[in-house]
Amino acid sequence: MPDLDLRAAVVGATGAVGTVTLELLAERGFRDVRAFASARSAGSQVGFGDGRLTVEEATPEALAAGDLDLAFFSVGTAASRELVPHAVRGGAVVVDKSDAYRLTDGIPLVVAGVNDQVLNGDEIVANPNCSAMQLACVLKPLGDEAGLASVRLATYQSASGAGDAGIERLRSVPAAEADLSMDWDLDGDEFSEEWKLRAETRKILDLPELPLHATCVRVPVLVGHAQAVWVETQEPLSPEAAGEILRGAPHVELADLPTPGDAAGRDHVLVGRIRRDTAGDGLALWIVNDNLRKGAALNAVQIAELLLERRLLPA
Ligand SMILES: NC(=O)c1ccc[n+]([C@@H]2O[C@H](COP(=O)([O-])OP(=O)(O)OC[C@H]3O[C@@H](n4cnc5c(N)ncnc54)[C@H](OP(=O)(O)O)[C@@H]3O)[C@@H](O)[C@H]2O)c1
Image (cartoon, rainbow, N blue to C red; front, side, top):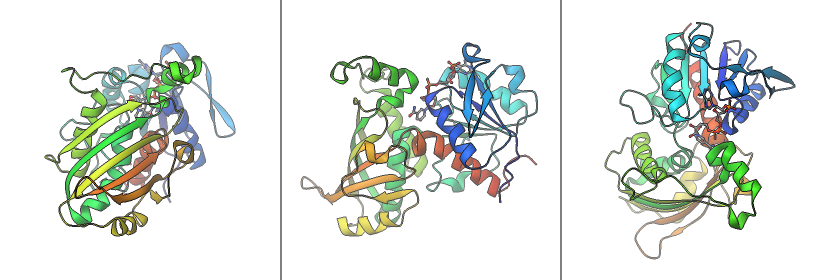
């Protein structure tokens, strides 16, 4: 049984992912948990189980004080780059949900149940992009069986993928008028989401040359990212065989035609409409997941549980 008395912090505790992280930690019986955010919300209260926590300001000094074993970061990239090293200096192992460290050599990018064998006493563990997370959960078992030749996908990503600001934007205007655009990559050719999805999926699956093309769009849905995916495998793989493989895959559940509403609040990645690609040699699939849970907070908590089970946290 993991030691749930370890001293944990949620940094970004007032945000969309931080709120769910606190909920999951309370459900799992973590007891010694502190909440941090920016100076803007220091002193406010957030829910934790049946009680409340007072939010502390995430200053370098507070994070480096040496009284934390584990820190879940769900702040933006710049804040992670600034603050994570202080938590590490103070002795905490950090699970970071931003893209600050995901592609850094030597820092594992982990989807629990997919590539958690790469955990190895690291100071920082990176949590992937929500879209890469659900995709990897499905591609890994199919690739293990038949080898992956190429992947094409279109994503339909919910507003909460852009955090509380995205949720607020969707709620403030009629859905048809919501500005749901994504950020451009520096080259202006792809959205950064599309580039990240390719690079992170390759790192997670340890397939650095995997041909992968994504078109990512945001849609006026509150929670739950959907993906239409076309996969070509190196060895023949029928839809029936793929279904059988996915039925037994970690964190995956088969469903006929899962919607974001079906996935919201659920732990599993839902997969349906597994069929032959009539325009090519491969398979077509439909994948839906709660971006705030397995796509972010739940995976981070599962990483922490693995670190505890394998005694990879400082004594
Ligand atoms: N949303 C998703 O589906 C999702 C999925 C995967 C990964 N992620 C990643 O997770 C991170 C958080 O996302 P989110 O959706 O939860 O964003 P969010 O709703 O905007 O929340 C951001 C949190 O960061 C805090 N924060 C901002 N600047 C800070 C600073 N300088 N110091 C300390 N705290 C600061 C905010 O606190 P205040 O209240 O004080 O402003 C808030 O608690 C991002 O890196 C995002 O890319 C998100």
